[in-house]
Image (tube, rainbow, N blue to C red; front, side, top):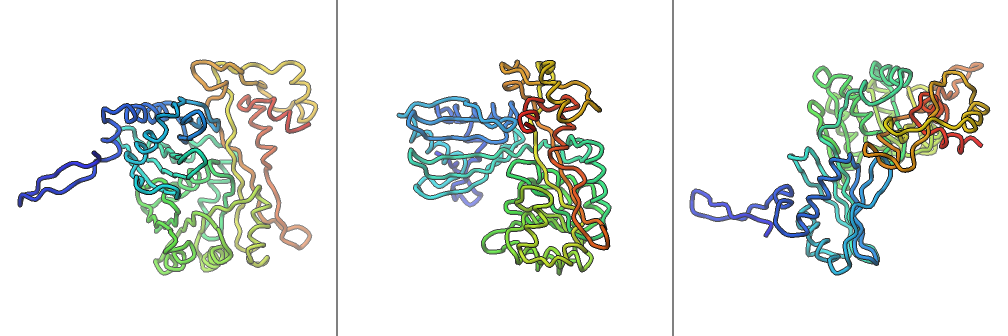
Length: 391
């Protein structure tokens, strides 16, 4: 049963649904398995849990530091019952099958929020849970940026108006960077409004607006502009109307942060132009274009010095200046890491418009490749990865 009887003062008994956290502590074998799975995901710092029906049954996998690894394989005879238990515990409709579903669950004791997505596949319903760590830091100084990268981000905090865009694939840390920027600006001093689909983390002091099919980013942005905002976060620019509204807001004295799907900082500019933002408007109001990625970090406990041959190859391509110690990951790993990887570090590419021969042209100040090479010189990124990309 997923509900409890609650006695009211007038003698009426109503059903109150038990929470996901309570359901995870049920005595059934599937509930215990899912409890162990979520607990292991939290302990290992996983970003996602994958529950994947396949020919062999159900694969339970964890994504840690960008890599998926198998937690457990469940036999085929348990496939349907396990998926039903996942749906029961995490609030998905048990009576609906063959259609995508989305949900959310809170696990306060584990300091986790889960975003749950279900998708029908050939062998059954696949479920992915994105883990949102409620203990995650949003202090800019603690996100692992280099001094140069942090200086650029801190300069963006001090802007009075304009548009700042961060691009990058899913899971590249864009949201955490944006929240850190908003917190650094100071919600107590300014009216900061965010438009998000969905709201990932609930941040004290921010006016967070959920966007949906009923209220699009463009709809919400038009309303927000009547709410006397100082700073606006638009979770994602998905269409021409939203792009143009972001720049209209900047032109009327607002500071706008947003994200966009593009491969690099210059590609952001090209994408905005393709969405119909006029070149003069772009040149006047786009303050900063950033591309962000997360790179796997070599485990400090078991990382190995690069071989002399690999060091020569690296120096030949990138020079010897600033090298501390080139390192490679240990294939076997150690008890402290997963296959030689422990954590990830952000790398940034950024560009802005600069005056050049009487024209405003976009200029890259640090490329993603240069950022990776810098991290490799510090012994943080496996030098073999950078060497392969270079030759």
